[in-house]
Image 1 (cartoon, rainbow, N blue to C red):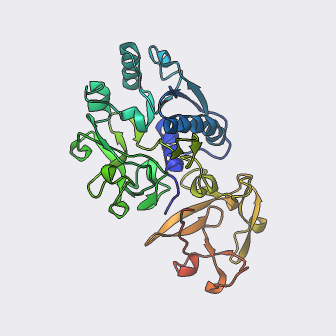
Image 2: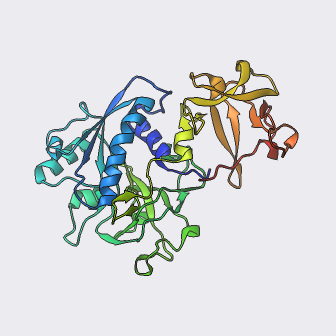
Image 3: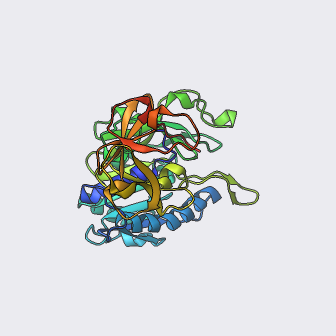
Length: 355
């Protein structure tokens, strides 16, 4: 699935970290997220933080968690997993010994973590030994690309909850990308979830800060903790006018393909996300037509993307177990799509592409 954004998959992991399954549409809140930020350095990072603090409350309402943002990092000092089941670091990390000790204690006692971009950055001093070496596994920051670009990511383990809604490769959001002192492939505690696919090279627009080859992990987890780190979190910016040129959170795959549960999604209309692809009359019959209808949680409004190979997918109805189909393999405009018994033919195969 050439997904526009990785975020929907990471939201699925966020849910799995706490509850072991994805949530249905608009559920009651079942866990609490506390996001830490500073928002004081680099307009691109500040803009990412602003976006995150606007969008995660919406994602929480849709996926069953509360979202609280704070710039008071001292809340880490005595934080427990009973208070907040997930902690996020938005482009920063703890500053004081008390904050660092509190976070390490939180993680060692059942807390979950989701970190972005600058969260893992450290200078030549080596940063925070437990966090950078043991927890993240990176060691020191080594280099970065410039300017910010999107890349094609390769899924390293599609059975992991973070990647259940992606294909073998998928497009990232635009970001500046970091590399590290340590090769995470050599760390038995680290499971790399996504890395830059070789088709992306060269990565960068400045010849002096461009990667032309190599192996670069972008998303990973430490198997000893409930955690994930994602290297994106830097929007493209016009620094002269302080204007956003890209978004980490907007995109067709994110806003149109919204997970429900058990690997199924609702497929929302881009112009009105309250409307989803619906099998008419809640039918389980062959040749039942498809339409847009206000989403109500019905099984006739939920679909599972099943890989057909070569980047194509079949969309299987949760209600009928039949496939979304172009009748008679038509290539004509205005063809009414229907559901039919899955046969694996090309009339039932679709490829998702970024916009």
